[in-house]
Amino acid sequence: MAGKTLPPLKIGNLTAEVPIIQGGMGVKVSMSGLASSVANEGGIGVIASVGLAYNREGKYDVDTGEQALRDEIRKARSLTSGIIGVNIMYAISDYERFVKAAIDEDVDLIISGAGMPVDLPRYLDGKDVKLLPIVSSVRAFKLICDFWNHNYNKIPDGVIVEGPKAGGHLGFSYKDIIENKAQSLEQIVTDIIKIADSYTPKIPVIAAGGVFDGADIAKYLNMGASGVQMASRFVCTNECDVHENFKKAWLDAKEEDLVIIKSPVGLPGRVIRNEFVERMIKGETIPFKCTYRCLKTCDTKTIPYCIAKALINAADKDILDKKASVVTLSVPFTKIAVETYGYMAPVKAALESSVVYLAQSFSQFSQVRFNVVSANVIKTSSAAGLPDYIKLSLYAESLTFRKKAIETKEIANVITFLLSQSSSAINGQSVVADAGMIVNVFDREVLEIFYKNKIGIS
Ligand SMILES: Cc1cc2nc3c(=O)[nH]c(=O)nc-3n(C[C@H](O)[C@H](O)[C@H](O)COP(=O)(O)O)c2cc1C
Image (cartoon, rainbow, N blue to C red; front, side, top):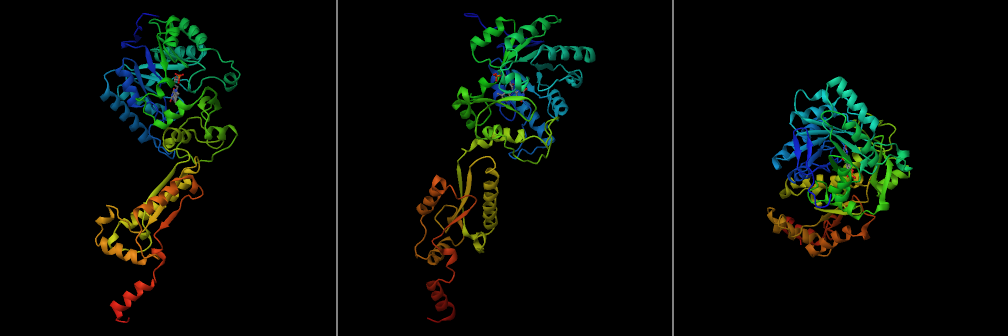
């Protein structure tokens, strides 16, 4: 292809000037940001529908899921006038609802794999949304073409052929992948082109899985493919929607860090080895409560862990370094009444109890710690806003054992200790840094002032 420009990718009446489809990457990896950027460059941008609305607990409800998908499509549309598609995995329970929502939002195309999307054309309702199944074998392609043709008088508007080198879940048996016996992408593409070309109009074939650079693209175009789908290559771009730490894990990964696991989805998956993956490979299980069965075939009683939770952890929770320490500042007034502190006392109490909750829940998948420093009255700008702040701080000072107010620097030192690994055994605690104030209620000096002023005894 040297010296030649890339041919456009035509899917029906859609023309992408650059014959690259950005592969959908679920659980918040390819959203409107990446999809619109790719579309603005002349390629086809794809929003992955799965997991857009999972919250950090892996909890999910379908209304939020559909709304999140609609929001992402609208956002992408506001950022580009290029071609926008949606990837909807056939395996998910919300399949029908997501397909209908995507069609209702007038996306340009729907790409659907992770199962046989045999009934996809049923939802078109006269709309011109292009439908592209993802297949990994000639057999699956033939089956879909025959079924669609027979039942809906329709053939696919294009087909994504995904080979064994793809990122994410793979449409091959675990054994074939491990033993390197899966058919190569080159072979499957060649075979599928023969069938795709026999239709009128010809079905554009798009090669996916391990397509990495210009030479790879040229190879498949020269073989007769109309374009390529690339996913992994986009993960580490600035435009990709996933968190920077997710990208960093990819950038830091070496070839030997890539492993194939048996995913609870029922397919083998290519993943980057990390602490969690190691535990799963060793056969550990992570008990979980399923609030919503997001995969049609998921047997929540027998699978070793919740894939939704694992993926949302990867996309969101790894925002924190695995050994991170989180410290928040509170006051000793959550259990003693200070009139002028008002509603801040219950707010701080809620903060302290959240810290205990976070410490417990993060320990299920990381070593991240959460602690509170419960500090005596110190000079912060918010404290200065308290009514009678000066009086309060002088009184607090008089109650310290040492008769000297706490300095901001001293609290910073305690925080530094809690942030450091020296405090690795402390988790979910409130560390009181008040020079004794809170336990010194019968302080001799304070009592004497009380007797003098109130009772007149010296
Ligand atoms: C992080 C990640 C998430 C993915 N999520 C999905 C998905 O939700 N649905 C899907 O059909 N394919 C998914 N894929 C597969 C891609 O869309 C694409 O076909 C495949 O990764 C192509 O191979 P490549 O990554 O080597 O370019 C995912 C791939 C990756 C790397």
